[in-house]
Length: 464
Ligand code: DUC
Ligand code: ZN
Ligand code: ZN
Image (tube, rainbow, N blue to C red):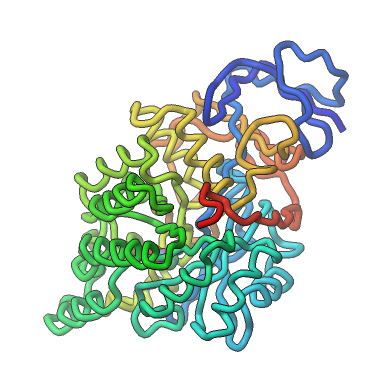
């Protein structure tokens, strides 16, 4: 099967130019001007931008918060319709099982036959035992070069102390495995939460009061220090505070392999959303908490300069009526997380490109190219080039819409960006050469997604 995509404006992380792309079966086989190949179908992309399919390196299709569990891979078509063709899911370590075994089990039970986007995995440490640290060097053999530990969430099964973080970092040294951390000081949050509740401050807004920026800054700086001590690379997920970003930037500038990402909600939404009446504020309960204008401006500068190298959704499909309400009367029981998998490209385009905050090439870099590299899947994903998977988004910049949960495929009863004007949309999306979105509508099949094995040493720190 040959598809010729003609006269689109092709955007990569380095450049943009008008040209044609030839797709043969699943791969890009030619890029150029006026390609004359015989094709089974010709797609006219005049007036459209052709972007590489997005790589969302921070997705939760299996996260649990107390008794609540998010929507799973049955909603992964939301990624595709939003221009993300590869998702990287954080998989819980199961009781008594290793990391790779837990991931295999999860894939067999919940992903195979269901996934509508291509996928890769990160492990999450639940049981910080010798066995887990000993397993770290062999994770790349299973195609899993990343492992996350939660510094936050005291009393939760996934909370890890400094000993666990340090041992994981030490075990990762020189193996090509990147340790990722959710950096917030769990003990300080616990004290502040208890103080709020003892004062009768139970509403969603106190989620942000009990998680001020410096609980993140402190843990980020601590994680950086531990990584330097362990001589290992570190990736800090969902950076939201200016000073946390600066700590990462400064360590990286000194030559340490310390990196971080942020998320569309931290770039665009304000803490004051948590004060919305009638428990609407619960929709904005995610961790770290939403911040103020000063932090948002610093984050835009950071993504522009490369101080943070990716923008990921941290997608968490908790429902408002059923699940967020578990925390009605006690904000500490509101499941933490914001849905946003479907909106990452639209929000970045509208709030970043259209406002002049980032270029289209920078968007591609943050949305697809660098996350592919971080996770060792850049041999086939994240770029429009010869031999790459034909994951292509034909973005129509002239379409205007309003973001709404009612038209979303995320499977929950609210949208984090509800009512936001969106400029442009993915008009057509190809997943490995197959048309899976047409006229902005998902037309793919259940189970079409396939596992993409991650290679070690995603970032440039061989030997560290
Ligand atoms: N924070 C969230 O908001 N959701 C999922 C996990 C996390 O750490
Ligand atoms: Zn997190
Ligand atoms: Zn997360």
